[in-house]
Length: 379
Ligand code: SF4
Ligand code: SF4
Image 1 (cartoon, rainbow, N blue to C red):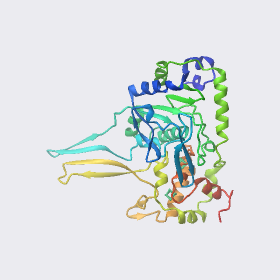
Image 2: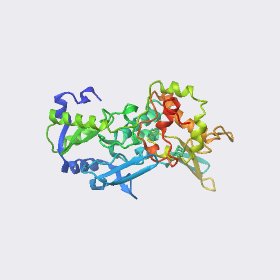
Image 3: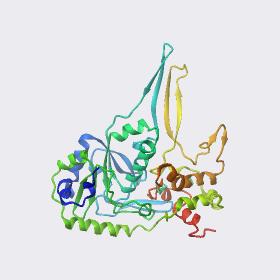
Image 4: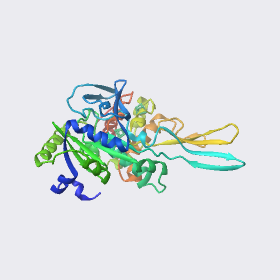
């Protein structure tokens, strides 16, 4: 992507940005739907999740999510179209499904054949927020960019992906994305970016594919006043983010706390339920299992989600090297905020706050870090 995509030059504003009427969001959706199966936030059982949709009206417009520690509520309460915060599940399940067959092995006349199974579906992720977009970029590093053995299954899905991001104006009480260096309006990584204004949408293209769709829309030129209004709204939203993590020298401080008594304390509260790893947009661990036919003529290799909180996760040669829950919690937090920086050069957390919302024990990762840093006394 070239730096003319930084949105500062008037030619770019004229060519690659458009302002559309609110009612024309349907036109944008239909243009995306023509080429892709669309995944977007949907409301089910009073929770905003994710699903394939065929109509823009399936998006839970007007719903607002209220989140606290171990507390979630979604209810009507806004005039905005993209009023909610983000789905409780991250989009990763459409790149790395919780369970999928990646290889089929057949035996015929004593000959073995191996067939790799790739997803061919062209998927559009519609309404992905900046935290989840960053989560996707982190997964790209894990599976492709910073992996000496790139994952061909992940890469295939990624190549067929179209990304419609949405600027975030609705953080919850549990979000701490700003302190993790994530901007409410993403600068890159999308094909299309939608910013919801009072009476219109500003649409940016971030790729050639996005520009083609943008070209097909009826719209008006974006003015300097529009951009100033957008900037003002972003600044106001920043003030709504009340949680934070101090990342100054964080990996070094955490390494110095590897024997802290705090791990036992948090381990005594943690239920090792794996909920946090399931809702986390960057947790990627999986196991590989085999499904075999009894006569030995057919076998499938299946990838299935795993979690560092699972009792068997760290079992090596029948010996579990992380028997206590305290050691599993330490592994999770240390990986996100220390080991990840050594492995991939970034943190493994985007500050989406989901693990705070969905932890049944009310464990707040930002408080754990504050305590390990000596910024609060939990004793
Ligand atoms: S660790 Fe928690 S806050 Fe960070 S990305 Fe994962 S779920 Fe979100
Ligand atoms: S930290 Fe919370 S969500 Fe994560 S495994 Fe422990 S109890 Fe479950």
